[in-house]
Image 1 (tube, rainbow, N blue to C red):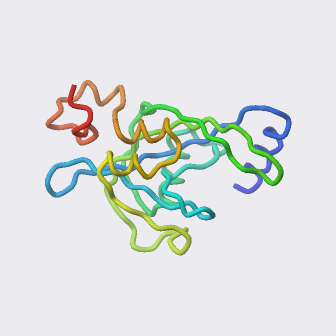
Image 2: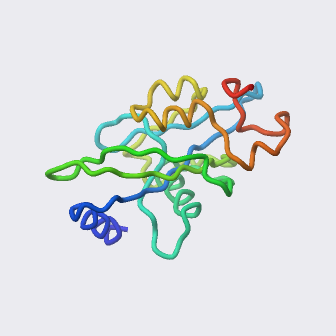
Length: 169
C-alpha cells in the first residue's frame, strides 16, 4: 500500500485530483434504530469514517471493505451503489491537496476484538445525527446524517436498516 500512496502523492504534486474510497459502517441498535460507527484518525484523533487509497486490482467497494477491516476492525456486507461523495483537503508535507472520496455503506455483521490498527484508533457507535456533529467535513457530515443509497430506496423501510429517523420523507 505504501507504493500506492507514493504514486498518489506524486500525482497530487503535479496538480492532479486524487481520490479515495470510504465506508460508513452501520447497524441496527437493539431498539431498531440506525447507528453508524466512527473511528479516530491516527494523527489528529478527529472522528472520521474508515477510508483509504484505491488498491491495485481491487474495485472501490472491495478497497473500502478492506479499509474498514484495517481501521475499524469490522466485517460486513458493503452495498453495491455508492452512498455519495465528498471532498476534503489532505495535508501533505508542504501543502494541501484536494481529495475526492467515494463513500459506500457497510452493513456491519461482525466486530473484531483485535484488528490491525486497534492500538492507534478508537471506534464509537453513534446515532447518525450525533455522528454528523463530530465530523469536520460538511459533505461527509450530511451523508452520515442522511444515510441512504439508491439501492436502498427500493427496499421497504421496515426491512431497511440504513434509513434513519432523519430520512423519513
